[in-house]
Amino acid sequence: PSTSGLTVKWVDEIRVYTGGYQGEKGDLAGSLTTPEGTAAEPTEAPLSLLVTVLAVAGAAILCARRGGA
Image (tube, one colour):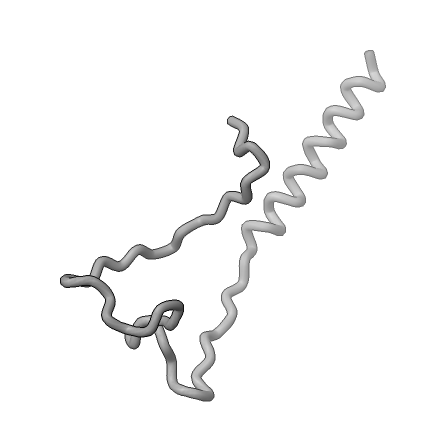
């Protein structure tokens, strides 16, 4: 389906606050802020490597089938 030129963004989490959020507009809620110096460990994504290998293998198979016909 067309997005009419709009950018699609994935939402990881939705929070609903009873009575609404009372903080400053545009600021993160207190539960979303982390102390200074605390950084999350980056996670490895082996799936992207698998997808790349499968795409290359699929392209090679398609080229071989078309070349043999």
